Amino acid sequence: MALSAAETFGNLAKNSRLQNALIALFFLGISALFFNKIFTSDYGIHLSIGKHFIETGKVPDKEFMNYPLLNQPMNYEELGFQAILYTVYRVVGSDGVSVFVWLMATLSFFFIYKSLRARDINPYIALFTMLIFAMPFRIRLQPRPEIIAYFFTSYLIYGCSLFYYKGNRKILYTFPLVFLLWANIHPSTLAGIGAVGAFGTQSLVVIYRDKFAKASLKNNLFVPLGIFVLCVLATFLSKHGVESVLTPVRLMVNPNQMTGISEMTSVKNSGFYEFYKYILAVSVVFGALGLIAWKLKIHDIIMAVYGLKLPLQVARGMAFMSVFAIPMVAQSFDGFLRRIRTYLSRREEASLKAGMKAVKEKEPSRKKQGKKVHPAAEQKPTPASPAPLPALRYFRLPIVLAWLVFLGATGYGAYYIRVGTADIVENGIGLTEHKFSLKSGEFLRNLDIKGNMFNFFDLGGFVEWQVYPRKLTFIDGRAGNPTLFMEHQAITSGMGDMESTFRKYNITYVITKTVDSAGMVLPLINYLAMSPSWELVFADGLAVVFVKNIPENRAIIDRYKISKNVLGAQIVSEMLHSTYLGINRFFVYYTIGNIYMNSGDYGNARKFFELARSIHDDPNLAALVSRLDGMQRMR
Image (cartoon, rainbow, N blue to C red; front, side):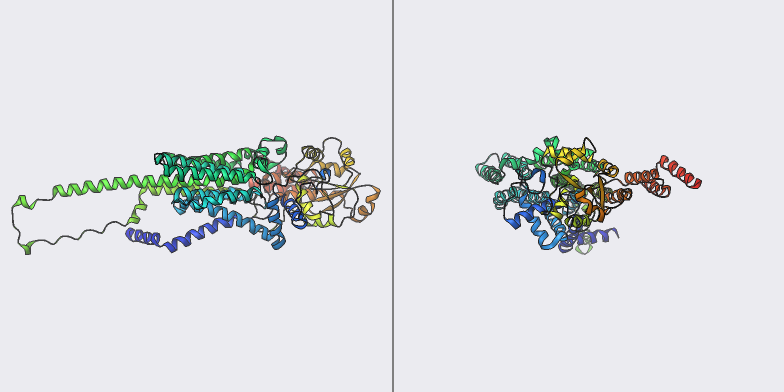
């Protein structure tokens, strides 16, 4: 029975068509994780700038959307991507943009897979490694310029793998063109230069192994070094030059630009930290196995160390971590398995030789016996037992145990991160219904009002997409001017003399959220709610609009005025929406419970405290629910 199972396994393993089909299905299953609904606040910024460039043909080197900075020099380093994004949007809409992002992510992982196969790494080791790293990778999959960086970096890793492990030199000649194109799409070419440079260490290994032979020096050092220099020069030939290359470094080392931007803080301060620690542990453990087996590659170590360190500087580095760390983990485990198989094969071979030697020593010598045996009496030789199937080698206990550990670590890790990030990333295509208020965009487009707008930072890009050029925004996600950003922070946090800032910029209406990206009620809302100088004219559960109570706005107020009593329900609605955007559900339910309790609505308070208890059964919550029951009975 066991032999029959082994034969079946061996036959399946030899069926190349079946193997290819299983691999393709596995890969497509991983790529299905990359269908994410659009929730990034920068989506509107990129569409607006791309639209301006495509429709006017003019490079936007002067600010044209934020009125406090109007006509000031404007950074347009991402213009290439923005033009591509707007073209896709104009042809196929937001649903098509989601598919475009999926395609870029899928191609990135395809190149990573092909780079691993170029090293002859077991396809299932490659796929299971990609599966666990697909989870943090998918968190950043939005219509942002980084998706181009993932794609190009993966292609470069694939090209370097083909050159160093398959001897394909032609693909290196495409690298300078890639860098020239990349530098004009997004200022992240430093990642590509780092990847190509890391693989350059393999050149040193090869020429050392070849004892510095002239042919080896030419093919494995001078040619790739020349290509690397051309790649650097191609980067500098873009319109943005050296400054473009150093943009990621500038963002990471400038604390003023990172203040208040959640994605620009360390992963330690984000909800991803627990998942990051698991990924780090998996990488370290399997990297150690590769080191023990002496199968680690220097370039893999360099890329993995950089990739694993990046999220500690900026949370958005989680996706790049995946691209850079996959090769080391896959190479380490594959090398460890190969070392085990080599060891077991040698032991098996030694055991077989010892057995054959023992049989020969025990075999009686006919010459020494000196007896003749009648031919008819001679026994026919016993047929030899069939040799064990090669597939049986896969059932050796150490190999089985190693596979179980690997599959358990990657499979459980993928499940753990997928479940843990279910509230952070919403699967599907098109716009998420939990972030963008399309009704507010329509309301503002049709609002005939004089004066300027104040908008919450997180809404800037969306508002620009909806109302430009009819109306201009105060600020958006670029936050390029530190002074303006600090003025925004002072207003939204209720600090200082807000009315003075409103007068400074002639602000007569405000569009904002009631809850910030951390799930906290904005102090600005408390001010606007209490001030008779401002009236609420729009609220739809995702955004609110206030207008200044001045004679010029009387007609608007008379037509659209809403009681400020609805703000409590607005806050609750936005907080519930925020649970689909990464805000902790326990925190949201507990906060809403307190809101209802403070307003005397004990029934709803009890309901949300119970929801909080379903996530974390805190004894204090149980006591609070019991107290609410008593208060309801006393009514």
